[in-house]
Structures are given as structure tokens and as C-alpha cells.
Length: 443
Image (tube, rainbow, N blue to C red):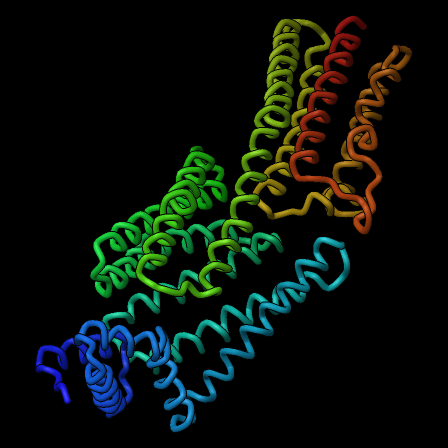
């Protein structure tokens, strides 16, 4: 019967230890078992290389890891508890987030509660238990940084997304820290681990390109969150690298190396393409719509605002020597107060500190304050311009002309639409002020 050389045994030993078989004595038992199987295959006339490939195909890619997990599950109570907790929390958190998304889309009550519970279950139950299970299975101090960076990045990302949706403070900061953690800690650590375990030069290049694509994509998300320029370009670069270069290349390499490509791999590739590419295309379409529609209209409204404001200030300056000068200055002070009130509202809504739906709803704090201020301003100007045609301009100071009646249960008003309506309101106020200034100056 053929016997293995010391070099052959070392190769088998290194391959098994590379799979992080850390349970005491289990690695030695597996090495001995595989060596016996290889010798049996060689007894049928195969070379060591062919015999070893046949044994590895018979065992499967993950079978050795599964044997260690089954052994740990049978003899380690803490591992068994953590494994069960990890599975339960993963299912519970995912189900809660799924139902939260459905309830959010349908505007049903309870969406926020389920979203918070699901996110906190994943962030503070699933992630720590998964980290514990990974450490139990590997005891790899070399990969500890990878596991911790993955845990921190995922936890911050989950909390940041929920905070953004719920309009909690510091959401943008949390997401920015999560993105930077992924870019400078998790992705480099993952790439280093993959390169260390990989001998195939082509796969190493694929891993490096994949890491670059992920960094570009993460930077794009960060720029989107922070409203920095270049987000669309970075996103396109990331998607092109990942889905037009890395995925096809990795698929081709895997197809050549393995005689049978698992269904799981096919589903992973097809599912990723089906989920991410439509999302990117929709994002780019929306970006073009905003560039061609909202942004140009908003820019036009701001230009009109600057023009009207300069015109009114110039009119007041030219009337400084007239008897009406104190009254004109008082009108301008009241106008500036209103404009500041609207600017503060825009800032709160843009930064997520206030909800546009809440602002549009009658009876809310911000809406009530604005209604009261506009009503007082309109009454003040009406008193100064008695006998004139100011009634034609009074509609410009009516909030219902800009902010429609809003039912939060059925109506949907986007953030961009709400901000645009506020810009229109500011221009209406300046137009009413301009007319009042001219009437008072002529009296």
C-alpha cells in the first residue's frame, strides 16, 4: 500500500490548520483521517495530487469547519447558548425590520417601534453573540481585529440608518463614523485576511479590486449622507468595479477551479445584481431629476429672493431722508424676523431635527408659530396701507397658499417639495413688503 511522504503530510496539515481547526486534538484526528483516505485513493493507482483532490471533493469545502462546530456544540455549553442566541436574534431582528419596512411603506402605526426593536436586536444581541461564536470557533488573534472592526462597523451602520429614518440627532455623524470605520479598518483587514489565505494570483487581484470597489461604494454613501460632491461618480465607479469586473472575473475563476459550482454561489451573484443595480439606476435617475428639476427651480427661487431683497433694501436706503424712514425700517425688521423664522425651519428640516410632515400638520409647534407670525405681519401691513390695493397681496401672506392641508395618514409630501414651498413663501413675503414700502413712502 502506498505511503505518504512527510512533505505530503505537511501539506495536508497546513491545509487543515488554514481552516482554523482550533478545538484540542480535533486537528490531529482530522489529519490522520484524511491521510488514511488519501492513501486508500492512492492504492487505486492515483497520484497524491489526484487522490488528495478526490478526498477534498468528497469531504466538501466546509465539512471540516462543520465538524468542529458540531463538536463545540456538543461539548461547550456557552458556545451552544451563544449559537442559539445568535440564530434567534438574527431571525427576530430581520423579521422585525422586514415588517417595519412594510408598515413604513403603508404608513401603518407601529413601524417606528418595530424598526427600533429590530435594529437594536441585531446591533446589541446578534452582533455580540456572533463575535463570541467566531472567537470560539477560531481563537485567531490575527483575525481579532477583523472581527472587531466588522462588529463596530455593522453596529454603527445599523444604528445610524435607524437614527436617520427616525430623525434622531447625530444620525449623520454615526453613519459617517461607520463609513470611515469600514473604509479604514474593516475592508483593509478583510482584504489582508483574504490575501494571506489565497495562493491563486488571479484571485488576489480580484480581492484587491473588490476591496477598491467597496471603498468607492462606501465613500459614495458617505458623500450622499453628508451632501458632498462626487457621490454619483464614486457610486458608478464602485458598481462598475464590483459588478462588471470583480463578479464576472471571480465567477470565471471559481467555475474553472470547481467542477460543480454551488447553487448558493449562483444565487449570491444573481441576487446581488438584481438588488443593487436597480437601486443604483434609480438613484442616478432621481439625481438627474433633481438636477434638472428641483435644483434648477430652487436656484431660480433663491436668485429671485436675492434680487427682491436687494431691491427692497435699496428702496429703504433711498428713503433715509424722508419722514417715512422709521416706518420703512420697522417694516423691514418685521420682514427679517419672518424670514429668519422660515430659514430656521428649513435648517431644522434639512438637518433632520424636524419632520416636514410635522411642520405641515396644523396644530404643530412650528406651523402654529409661522401661522401666527404671518397673520400678525399681514395685519400690520394692512393697517399701514389702508385704502390701497394691499388686499391683492394679502394672499401672499396666507400659509395655505403654499402649505396645503395635510393629513399625515394619507398624504405624502417629500422633503424637497416642502423646502421648495418655503422658498416660494419667502419670495411672497418680499413681494408684499415691496408693495407696502412703496405705499408707505408715497403717503
